[in-house]
Image (tube, rainbow, N blue to C red; front, side, top):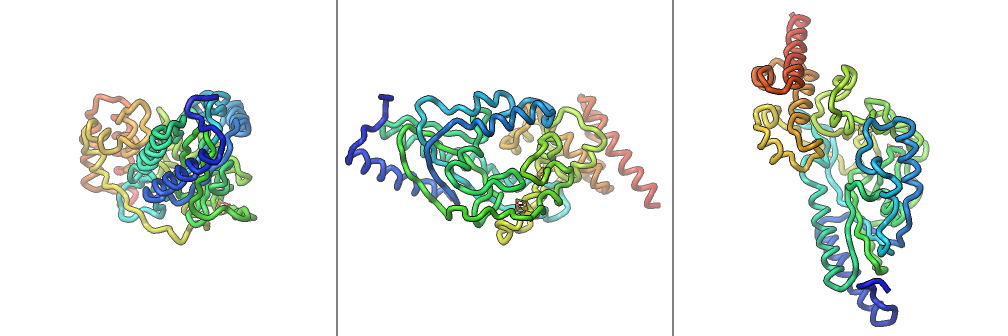
Length: 346
Ligand code: SF4
Ligand code: SF4
């Protein structure tokens, strides 16, 4: 018998029920909008799909679950059960004339859910059960747990979509060795996508195939984390400095919750020190925690915005003298973009 595994019997059922109530209360109080639970199995479907994407060259580097899909597919040997939770967040068009950031990244939504899952894991461990949590990590296919636990549909946008919230959710799961039934929110009914293709049509890069597939290397969320950008990729970033919400904004599921979300002032990035960047935007995925990626994306966004303002001028003055060749080049491109605009306007 695995250590911490509650023996079967009337007493253990009652304890599991109490734990389920406690866990549900904890998640609901933390703002979880949907949760479901079920037996764990290996995520071979997701692993095969990830392998296929790598083989086809749909990714430019083998990061996240693309690194070792076979390993990510297999849960720990002790894990029999998973509880998946979804936390909602606001999506909508950017408000104001700042730089755009994806809705989930405006605040640290992932840490909020991570803290809740951590608290749930502790609760289970205090009761002698084995438990761990998985969220946005290399080691597990979050979507596989969400699908198995019927937290939502998998939309044509490839995302988990929760009734009433659509794709504007982050998801994570607790794994444990005991059956603990937790349910929050409505169970998904009929698949909502039908003949709809709005997400595919709204995608500025053609990353969505429309049949439930995605080419990650074409997605702006991926492009923004690349070491170097092609001229076309610079154009596609638009005024986005981190992530993209276009396919989510286009989705009718959960759209009544959509509202304009704030943009960020360029100076929050271009006038910040590297230490301030990591502190302020530390919840973003920044490769190697290198602030150069954030500065680079902001310079590209300012060039695409093509506005001659104090932010752009100060950014040019600062980064033309930067120690990074890449940033000096981006500053030069920004200067050229503004100069070209000035000439074409005159
Ligand atoms: S936009 Fe339409 S097709 Fe795409 S995920 Fe939403 S409902 Fe499904
Ligand atoms: S996040 Fe943006 S680029 Fe990526 S699939 Fe959605 S619309 Fe396309």
